[in-house]
Length: 231
Length: 205
Image (tube, rainbow over all chains, first blue to last red; front, side, top):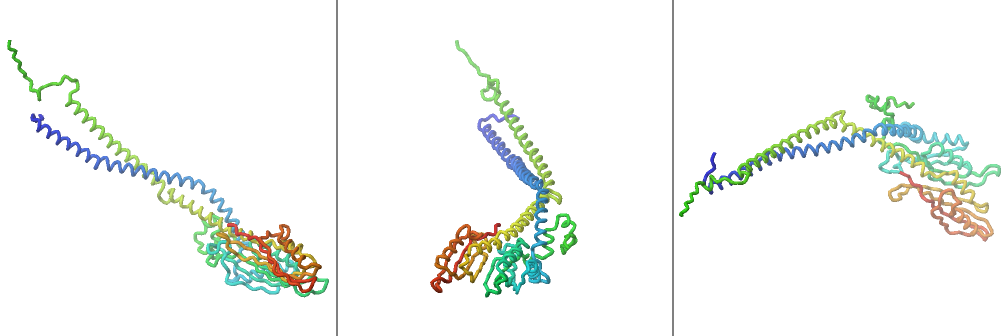
């Protein structure tokens, strides 16, 4: 093809060609390079994001066994605490169990308890209040004891359960008896036990602290009691 | 002499440049190179985008699904949460021990501080739960009332108060000691109240 001879025609032709080239470049960027570049950038960002997540996941997954072991240790300690020291209701009643402890210790240190009364309903756990899974069950006890017997009794009571608190003690001297007997006082004190919150069912507690292998076997056990090993 | 000069070349269309680079040729070459570059760049981008997408698909396979890393990580997170919760429960229940008054040491130390001239008529200790900032604590307070018979009864009671306030007096650290009004019953005897407030014992969470 021959180029036109006239200068004007040539200029117009070149201008037209230039416009075509610019349009072609624009179209290439808009419909070819642009979308591909966007796709590439998106894929790259997604890749980096996923790679980061995978790295992070691997770091955490590597700790799984250590976490599991640590959790088993803590659960074992909690199981022991739960079984030995957290008071359970008998037919919805804590007083029976509490009095059993109070009178049992009285018998061990050879003193007599005059009376006891419970504070009902249990109060919020003192340490964390609303956020706690525990409540505080308190019983008020009265007895006629000497000062030495009071010391022996309270010491034995707190030794029996490291989580109970005797937080109130009132000693009122009585008239002196015979010289041969240590003077008796009217002693009253308040003892508080940790108990599970009302909404923490026995089965939930057992399930919570059951060893991992028992929990895995426990799929069918809706009551959570299966294989918990507690008599 | 008349020199006749005839120019037979059409200056616009037939004139040849003496330069070794032909403008037309250079334009064609430039255009071709530019075209090749653009096409190569597009191809490069397309290929890289394809590779990156494949890598994404492969990573997604590792990440998603029932046995994928995301599920495994979720399990670990659940385990972490369970462990944290169990530790908190243990910490909380352990804190119950921290707020207890060691009654044997306390009562024995009190008895050791009371002289024979003083008879205690009321002995009351209470440790209600109090809030201390964000923490909960038990603040034990000892309230005593007594009778004294001595040559200088008021001085005897002051000595008792000072003993109870002093570091070696009671087994429990003392925050403050207040002595109420001393009332003489006769010259050598009287009654008194003393209140000892101990430093609080915090539920250490």
